[in-house]
Image (cartoon, rainbow, N blue to C red; front, side, top):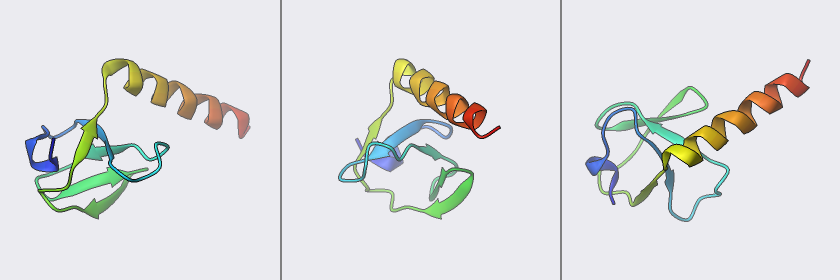
Length: 69
């Protein structure tokens, strides 16, 4: 699947990047990583995340933030 085929708000990973990086489609030409907008080519190959993967991502992120206290 390509970035262009995603809907705005979809979570995804970029092939060849670390699986720790989870992106979100912000517009037709930008994605966000940790609330920072980054440009991306429409033809970039991406892997959309399933609902279970998204839930796990947020659980890990929440646990990390709790441990910072």
